[in-house]
Length: 469
Image 1 (cartoon, rainbow, N blue to C red):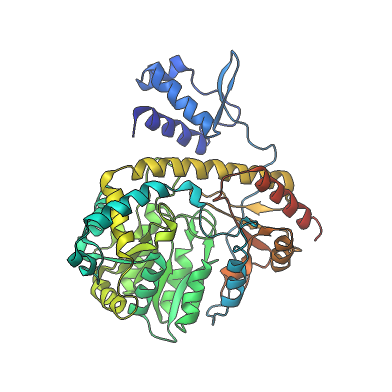
Image 2 (image 1 turned 45 degrees about the vertical axis):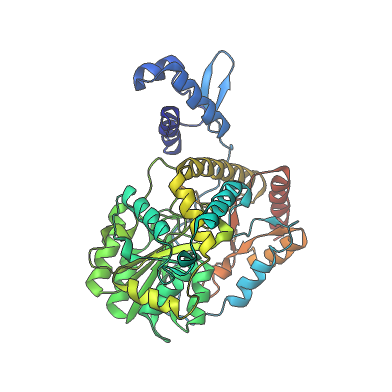
């Protein structure tokens, strides 16, 4: 990272934490140069970047100021209420109806589970794939089919080490996206009829997996900022024969909540005491807005109890379907189970990503991606403030590309989903994120696509629809 980029991130962190408030003057170029020990040209470049990101604005003959936010900010939601203790799951049909709504490219994709492909370096990846295919040997095509491409595993292990969580390459199994890693991990530690602790609300794909494997959900409430309620989880673990937990400790989907390091350590200590494995879904690990990455629960794992699952689908190559599991004590079982199902992810896709990571540029791409998503989040929040009912509550995650909206209780999110779709707008209604189809007045909206006048118009239409309830 260049010096002006580091300085820009320092200032953006002060803005994000409220140290520099909306409308407040940021240090002048001369003041910043003297105080931070950087050259005036470095300060200018940093401020130009912060302008591009929509964080500050220049006023003639006055200097730079933190950009004013919308005059009326929507309130954040409270902690989610507790759901029934255990539940059978039947959400697949509802989830499939949401997914099918995205097949029409003319639909505004607020219901999408992926960022826009326009945000990814697809042309650069294509060159890496062509290079990899030229260099791969016949033997290399079938080598490492159980665990995945050796170069790719080493690159992933290096990123773990850079993030402060060293682990052996042998623990990594390359999969067809994070979803296969999560599926395999759960299958390794459960049997039909078992209880699995999940978040509430939860990522709907998690619910679909439990439904397919005939597992029962134990829903644990999630706070929109602080993450899963560890105390309630402790109480359930003490009373119920929970066999596994499937959780997102960082940028949880759909709320965007993140556990603090202390809470992650507390969570791991609790699970270790009960010898309950954790399937940690960390698909959004690289999409944080701050200057430092979050450590996963896997960082505290000293007995191999955590199956940490990641993916390049949300940060680099959505169509390549390359993910992985850091399986801990379950790595060999995951590898064997994969051989009995999909055998191996695409070899060309693996060598392409391995070459891209080896050549460098991934972190530079991630900085651009994070800045784009942060700007798009601000634009969606501002639009929601303009158009949505005053009683609406909305999350403010520190990364990712989802906002969770809690509308007035008179709103029927399923009805809103169908009416919005008739208007050419896809949303993800709250009931698909619950084993019991709760959250009927809530919805998840994605700001993963570049903001356009069409996006603004779609928010205005949603506001008009909400006003009819």
